[in-house]
Image (tube, rainbow, N blue to C red):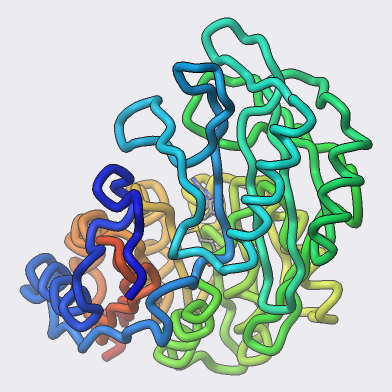
Length: 380
Ligand SMILES: C[S@@+](CC[C@H](N)C(=O)[O-])C[C@H]1O[C@@H](n2cnc3c(N)ncnc32)[C@H](O)[C@@H]1O
């Protein structure tokens, strides 16, 4: 295997240099240690490709001591940039585009934004790809102005003809978030369209989308098939992002209601519903906890919930409202077994666990995804 030149400093791949079988074994042990007292943990589903699986890269720009432009990943827990030429976890084409855009930035003497003085222009570069070979470039600036805009677009397209859309994003916040809320389309449609579970999904710059281009369908199918959905079920897709899971379930149920906090993701979800001609789904832009509370207050009947919260897990407002509505079955998809353990402790007062299935979405890193299926206690 090719050796990553920055593995010692980067911190992104905690398991670099370790055989994939061993990585999977460690992840299995980690999930078992946290969750096996609740229920038997199934054998982890490995990823068929352990490298070049990522469909997204986020690169930051800065200057070195000699005022030369550098670009790469932030060193963990610091604001220092580790220059990288390529990331072995990313799609090869993404690496080629990063290298090309970097050369274009340097050649055109685009200034780099300084967070302290708030002067300069370019901050970050985000690239996303789809299984259908569409590529999105997002140039993130700290000021409203993107220097030499037309020229940059012309050169990016000349050297990277596969790029289908280019976006200028403005992020003036002093935070660890890569993207700000304002986007201007410089080229193309402003989104890319992926295919997943037989459906088409539109992805905008700010929307969450699963990053593993091989394993997302495996993850979704594990949850959907294990949930035993019925034709007259009302299903909540909580923390739904662009609606990918809920829309993939629509053909099996009576109605899907998705809820998500990020407005652009909800807009994408609604568009995805339309382009796939799905009539029995709707998407709400709201905090998932507040939304479940309002459903519970109105005594809304629900049969099933798929919840896929961020790493911080769910919250008591969401879970207490959910259990009051007594859905028969819940699929909890978690990217953090620690918060999953915490949330299961609460849910197990009301629900029995039927399945704990780890799925490896992030080879060479310590991260692990887990699908947990729960059934209402008195229904089993
Ligand atoms: C792990 S992602 C899952 C997205 C989607 N299910 C998928 O597979 O693409 C978590 C999602 O929860 C959203 N989110 C975070 N906090 C939320 C909240 N309090 N209420 C609703 N959605 C939230 C994020 O914006 C993100 O889209």
